[in-house]
Length: 470
Image (tube, rainbow, N blue to C red; front, side, top):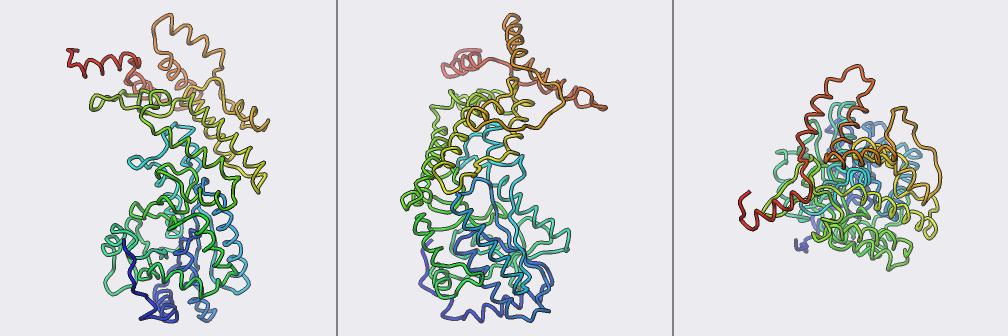
């Protein structure tokens, strides 16, 4: 949307805005949760709140203010370092000045992370119509934090650095959830949570004018933020996402280095062009993921069945499912090689692009859900990174030799090997359990999967396209 020439400072001074913030804080006896993403808008909102509360007597600053940032675990490393440093300084200054601010970084559960879903379950790289990452990696962690504080305090107020004019959708939502005669908005989905947007009427120029003229109270240099935007070619920031209406990251916004929803990652390209050459392997890996969205590659790298075990033919096309296990293994190899490369060439020799917990979860998913009887994760890790200790599971697992025998027997009998392997894995997982009530329904689900071969499915597709009788 076009940027208005109107400035908030033509009608209001920073002191006026401070008074509004103080009024909201004192009249609504609830804790605050401020979403901080490291960008210009959230920085402006956070600074305004800090200065407003600093003007209050200490005894009136009695409601806690939680400053939270979202770390999806695949954030651009330069941005992560900037945010982490800011939060550390803010926490230290808050203690010194007896301000009610506390900082926290919210992260997705291991089961919801990018790598566990992409490499573990084989979810294809996100794209516009299947953006599976936002809810799992951003909305759920932020909402859990808010709901935990609601459970603790009864109600909370979320302070967001959102502005009118950022998008038509955002403007509609701001209007829809407004409360008459109140500065607060109703949260779109969380009960007992309200939203306060102190910079809602700021223009883009207002934001930069404020940051350049009002020093950071936690000793940041706001000129560094300008440099960061310039180096990343960034036009915006990825805000703390609290619902589906929050604007998504665009081509030139701070965000995840793995993002394939955009055509090109201009932010990471800008960082590389401005001296962060060590990030080139990250960009190349991201581009490799984006290439997997090419429809011509789907038969090569994706299952011909959907994740529910069914074969889907739509509009005379076979709809492919998740990445094959073989391709997921290739992705893990590439990722670990990239990690080793950036450890050698980048500023942090201990950087982890994938966590130990994620590796353990991927290993578990492969072994229990994807018939990885070879136990590939430790082998891949050892070849690229080196030996490490792995979680010991007392459950009896099948081996590579077992799989070779099973493949031979199934080939002789004309039975799909994956069908038998799934049945064996299901029995193994429930072996020794006191209650095995679910095993029958799980076996029934497996038998009701579509066990036609890919060749049979394609033959049926050809008949449909040629209008041949079945």
